Image (cartoon, rainbow, N blue to C red; front, side, top):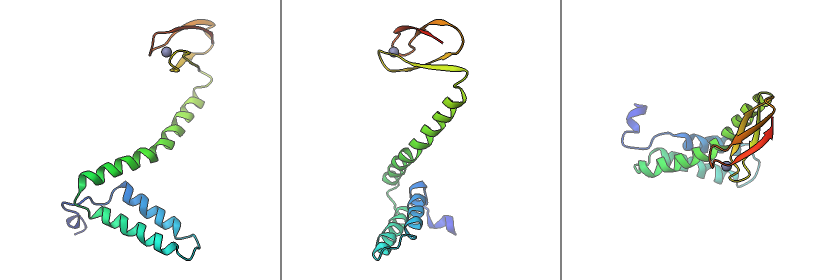
Length: 124
Ligand SMILES: [Zn+2]
């Protein structure tokens, strides 16, 4: 029955769940007119679920996911970089600012940028 409700409609997606979570968080704020914002957010989430303009809702959801996933990606990149800090040394190409990862403890090495081909000499 639950599935039949969403035939030909957008259905629940990440942005709708995000809006519900936002409404849940806002429900803890003690402000006299907060319930209006709270209801508007929930109505918006429900309208999105029952929208027949699936293409537009998908675009909105994709934009939402791109914003939400940015800090996640940054965090995982930092984690990987921290793990590899004793194995690799990272330099930046002076020409194109591409990050270049070189194994540590190899002495003086000639590094060729993988992006622009610029060569730099560094001690690892
Ligand atoms: Zn370069």
